[in-house]
Length: 485
Image (cartoon, rainbow, N blue to C red; front, side, top):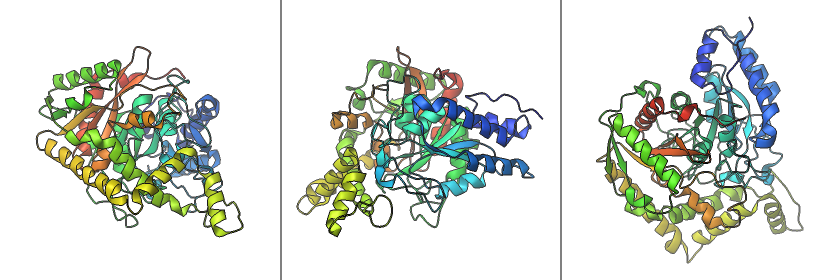
């Protein structure tokens, strides 16, 4: 059998159908993806590591299997380089883990492979997932395939670029303050941050443990639903992973009549670029034409989201990154004393942004400042969660732009961390409240850059968000537009 040509921008759903019809094989699909990575990743730098031998061996084994392994049988997938895969490097974008090889698989990796996925490589990310542009990676930034002079968003920028540029049909990222949704929006793909606890964090290199979540980055909403169905569920190795069964694929009915969408208009009064605001307004009009009811909601404490997030996240990072000490794993730089060894290892291994956040977090947790900063931030976090809970008494989802602007130029904000942090203004609320949130393409700016529509839902209601986004995707052209590769 001669395999049929494989569309660069084919969805997971269409590729699975082609495999079922024997129009192609897992090995042919894997070779095509590896060839595209080899040919196209140079200027984009989406991949930190590629493992062709491992991937092809896995694909051949799937072709020999008597029946499909599961929902992702034969589908190539890329993983953000802070997710552990046995035998592959796991750098988390940091020099301190430059030569670290993971001795175990993350739970999501076990679930993906049980479902038949083929892991082709690890993608570039901001160091320890700290950043909004992927410029904080110790090995160099990824570039947006829509404009190589612009950032792809962060910290899961490599995963977003791999999918948007047609190198892989599916990738996983991690989202702490917007790191799946933001690069998905800026690269014109779908990105889903699940409810905190929907997906196990075992094997995810920790940044902020009360915020981190793994989620899918895809070319269609249906693909995101398919992937979430595979990776979600309880895990005895992660006490925060919950048993809340749901069928996400079945939720994609195309019918959203009567669903209620709330818009926090007060948050959008300033700081949103005109082209982003126009695309967002048009997306609301489309949803209304489909039968959704749009109304105003208030999220008064979300204006404090950025300072709350950057206190909570840096405090947790200060604790989590204490394990990288030059003793147990990763980089080791010797010293005359153990204190000198610690200082030299961490000074050489950590980048500027990671050092900044460790210092901020340590300060916020220190005696005399804990109550004034960290405790107060947790109190306001509770107020933010309460605002969302009250809003969801009246609506089924909250709609926001994913980002206040389209992708900005590489280097444009690296000298101004506060300006960089403002890119997260619309994405930090959902993780602070532990809620699911999804970004779906909703337009292009006049200079041909993608814009994302964000939908935030009640805890464990990913199915509602997927239903809304799928209905929107079906009647708009944005999912079918791709960068010139």
